[in-house]
Length: 511
Image (cartoon, rainbow, N blue to C red; front, side, top):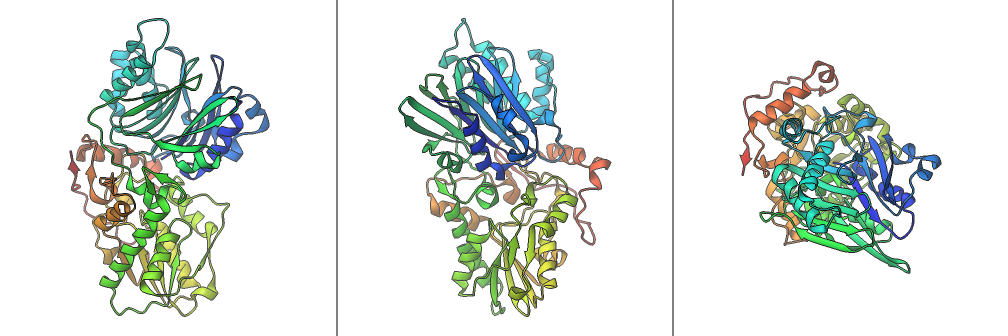
């Protein structure tokens, strides 16, 4: 999961891209980068850190031009965190291309081999984004016949990318001297939206991972880029769009709606806030079914993403809603911090339990999801330390039992507390008196309730269904072995007793 943005404007855009990246900061805290084009010359600055820490006045002054792209990076575990891995990436031929990417290429190793043996291109980092850039560059070289570059040749090159690249990807790229390109994988896993505003000088266009980035910079949201569609905006602000793959279907990542996206965003016609409210409705019904007669004095959210669900749970159960945890907003999102030790330490720095809300009460704590269990474990202990009588824990998402390979940092079984365990066993591990998970179908229906046009989802971490068709048990085993490097292993242990979950196979569903 990363955040990307691309802009064509009638005036310098360095500040505009900076501001939009701030609005997408929740999508990645590891690194940030901006690239602009002035005439036919690229200017780029990128480094590790959050947006406000990466860019200084001197850096912004070095980014002239009316067209540019930016990215905030969230690395999946096992990928490097060096500044060289930060995006955007650049290649000088053909024409000069600079690219930023959100997602994960599942056949990356195969493509690297093809780059070396067939395309005669050198990949200098471990980033799949650099691979994507070189695949596109090679396809554009093959699609170009004359000196000038026409939109049809660009779309032909994008079709070549779809033919070769598997996985999830939302992409923005600049072709020097020609314009801004954006496209989205054929399954529509990662989000990508386009906005426009008209000025006295002419039209301006912006493409971003979430609608909130468009609206925050006062662009009018036009639409989502469709799965398998490419949009090219020339330097004179003329928009060209084409469906570049026929067998495309919309399967948005449901974890975006559960946790990753900002609540004020709208993804593929689904208001994120409304979807989380509906998840709360269904969760309340599950609590009523599974915990009849259990006394609950108060419902509390883990701020911020679980707040809508918790409010609906309290309303449905007619139980008082209270804010028992105070959030330190100067600590980043713990889910996307690399390494369990860092996450665990950050929980106590990020949240503080107010004893006046907990003392002597039976507390129902609602969180958006439980992935590794470390955060939940710490939160429950904090509630007990603050004087809670009983702590009941509820997750607005179902158990995360399967690896995610489409750009979210939870790719191995051993890191998933629910893998190979019953709900009761998970409750014991995290220290809850009772635990209630959302049902998978209820979670999906909650989203359908907000937009009936969206029927299918990428929900592999919950249901084990990998829609790209190339994810096998062998593939997942290989990823797991890469992560079990001794250097990394010491930082990925969950503090639980008896890590003896079954290791034989996963119940995969592959198209």
